[in-house]
Image 1 (spheres, one colour):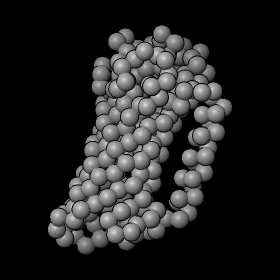
Image 2 (cartoon, rainbow, N blue to C red; image 1 turned 180 degrees about the vertical axis):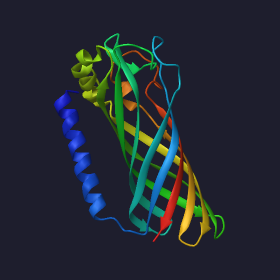
Image 3 (cartoon, helix red, strand yellow; image 1 turned 180 degrees about the horizontal axis):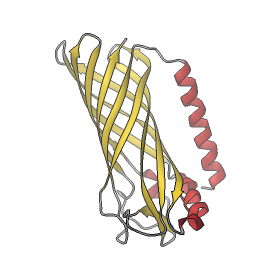
Length: 214
């Protein structure tokens, strides 16, 4: 897939994301914190998994009974290196690397079972876009900015089908917690032709959300 086609897909998703914000049902919103475990099969790079910290928010778009359509965003970052014609997470001590900011845009449908007035559990699925932007170069890393940026957009490496499991706990009226496990699948490895294990670039995310019920 050419980079211009991938960019078109990205802009369509962003347009839908902006429209969804405009249609926000305003029944609640969540502030999210969590740990992200990033799969990395490149031997000459950071250890596997790479552990990152994320911060973000989630909003409902549409609710009917136990079904909710949600949108959200999550931000995290780490160092990346350019080696063997690919970008991979790097140890912070490595020369010529980049700090890469990842903006994750989520769209998902969830279904929740209420176990009691205070506790519920549910599952969800959808699609995430992970937009990686090289920000700050270290040492002579600036020479790889163009290669690294193209790599993140080529072959639709920003596309991740996702699955979720969560537990909700109502603390007090108007305030709750959600504990989530989110799996992001690097489906682009099916066609990228890099010969890496399928899990390379995949993510398991453990998220704690403070939910404000409006």
